[in-house]
Length: 111
Image 1 (cartoon, one colour):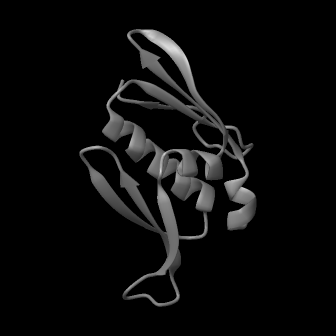
Image 2 (tube, helix red, strand yellow):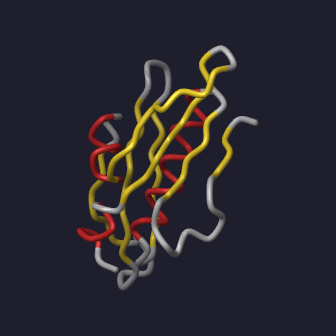
């Protein structure tokens, strides 16, 4: 699946606010990355020039993380970046990709 189709796949994120499950986000990968200020650009592996991927920059008030992810699975790369962002935030969260090929169902972060 190409990047544009993957960007428009639906996701749902909940977090626990003082023990109460709260809907944090329901929408597309693209909209979540924009909402959280996570930037993404296309890159080429420095040693294996035929290997392409994406550079994600995740910034919070006290942390900036840069993740270079290579491969052809853009939705899977977004899954990893979102899990890193939620881990940095520190609250209990569940992240559910709503796509048919989601291998593990919901991800549980900071449990």
